[in-house]
Every structure is written in C-alpha cells, then in structure tokens.
Length: 329
Image (cartoon, rainbow, N blue to C red):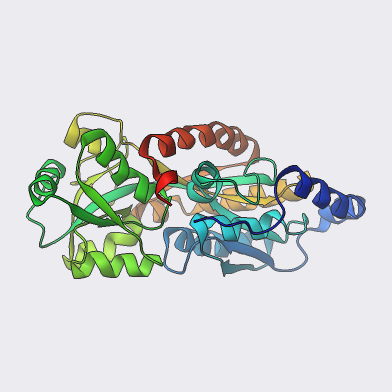
C-alpha cells in the first residue's frame, strides 16, 4: 500500500514554491555552467531491476557526455512512489533527478492519493527506453504456448504468478488475463525483484511477466520457458517468441512499459535542456546494445516526452480501473 510520505496536494506545492522562489534567480544564473558536481540519479526500484540496469547504463554514458558522474541511488518501495517522492521534494537545481517509470508516474497515481502529483511536481527530461513484458513459465509447467498455459491454469483451478512489483505492468498484464479471459490467476507479491526470480525458478509459482532484459539468464539456463511477449512486435533478442496478439488474435494486451527521467518542478529550463540532450544522446548512442538486451531505445527530449507522458497517465488509470488492482492493495 502507498502511504502518505509528506504533506499533500496544493498545500505542499505552495510550501515548496515558497522555499524555492527566493533562490530561483541564482539557479538560473548557475545554469550556464551546469553541472559542476555529481548528479544524484534516484532509481525507485531495487538493484537488478530493469529500471536499475537501464539507469546505470544510461547514467554512465550521460556522465561521460557531461563530464560528471551520475550517482545511482536505489530507493525502492510503494510501486516506485518512495523514490519518486524523494525527487519531487528535492531542490530544483538539476542535481537530483529520478528514473521515472509507468509504475512510479502513471500507475501509482491511479492506485490511491500520492504525496506528489506526477504531472505538476516534476519536469520531464527525456524518455529513455520502452520495453514489453515477456510471459514465462517455470520449465516444469506443461505448456509451450500461451493458450496451453491458460488451459493448464483452468484445469488446475488456480495458477500462481509473481510480478516485478505490486501495481506495475508486470502485475497488471496477468490481471487483465484474469478479468478479460477469466483465467484463474493469483498474484503472489514479492518483496523485491530478486525474490520474484527465485520464486519462478524454484517453481513456487507457475508464471511471471517481466521484461526480457531481466529474464534472459533464466531463459538461457532453461529454468523458464517463454510463451509470448506483450507488444505489437516480437522482441529482437527473442525472434522465435510470438506476440500475445499472434497467440490470442487480439491486441488488447499490448502493454508497453516506459522508462524516463524527471527533475523536480521548477528546475530551470536551461538545466532541463542540458540533461535532456545528454541523456537522449546517451540512449541513442547505445541503441544497438540496448536492443540486444530487449529494450527499445527512444531518446526523446523533454518536449516530446512531456506530451507523451501527459497522454499516457489517463490510459493507465483505465487499466487500473478495469483490473481492480487498486481495490486489492
């Protein structure tokens, strides 16, 4: 459950505005020589998660471009809300930013009232990558296709699945299967991504949905079997794995996850633009390497990302409503 972390809503924004208004001119003045010290890059998910992998790779490259260091700080919990809130309340000087995700900036907002407003309390910097969830089963499950797995679950009565986190796309996709296709699936929450991996590999659960970048080692070892990928197109690193659309004949389950970067609201535009240019360039320079591990490089700068982000928030609110996930937690 997402708990209140600080004062909420308009009162908090007015309070923060009062704190930052006085030094705003000095921030603008310092924008020309930004950055002059390391940048704190908060990742709102744990070590080994997709967000962590993407943040470290892109941060390293962006640091080279800006001739500074992006210091990764993992702040997991509450579907990404804890880490995101740490940035929403940080000084708007460009030295504290976060790797925001669908979970921390769209899904979490639909779950219950947050201590931050995903749109008003942040400045979008860049859309880094997108990725789709791969649906895998433990190798002992006697199903080689998605349809076979659904039949197996129905005959079994209930099939357990583990996700990459509560109220993330990796939970919402199985919940859509449950609601729309009446597949008897039951969620088993895990404290962190590493526990999720352990659960699927050990056979304590039958199924897991997670981006290919995190599951590749277990696919390589034969511990899990890939059934489908929830995207319009097949994953380049797994060309033989069909899309859910190919498996089921519908595109209703194409849920693409995105990973972007955000600064606190009020960060001077020259600083946002500097960060946006560096992070976008870093992603685009690594596009081939990123695609090999199952994520698609975007590298959209601030204005384009902002428009996309604003349109995506209500879409995920509808998915949360359909699945009833907010009522489960």
